[in-house]
Image (cartoon, rainbow over all chains, first blue to last red; front, top):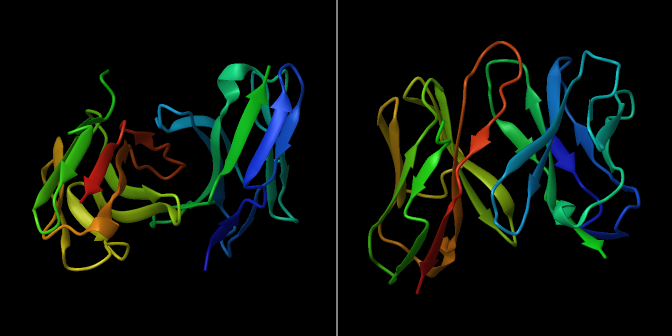
Length: 115
Length: 115
């Protein structure tokens, strides 16, 4: 069965510093996609960054970047220059590229950015 | 684009009552997903539709839950009769399914409280 594991239920970081959220996944598929979603206190789910498994280059979106280690099935999210608005729950998710369009979700990491 | 629209935003009801949650996906999207989020179980996929057809309803907890998508622009999730353990935030998401990844866009959620 496909699974996604986020081993850090809670994390905190000082404003302007860098923090890394971990995610590991398990899938038997060769082609899949990985996502990080953010859920702030408003509870709106927002896509932060995506990675195609067939791409070796790590995805980057402004202050957000990933460290994708395919062999280790690891997909960590790095947030640079943390801002107060980054305070949120962060969810890692995996989608197989086949016919089944189900996203498999981790349980989330609660990140607090402290002033 | 207005994004995914859900109504109501909040619902408080008494045990045994029927509850209907509504969702309007983003225009042009052909996949629709219903999720339930709780502290204990995280984000759970209840059911998803492709082109208005239910594809996977294995996440529907029991017969008290039912979902319909009569057309491409509207879906409902119904709970009858409701129970206190159904209290959760229910999200609707939509996407445009294609051979590559399909980002899911989430609505603001409906917070359901069953007393």
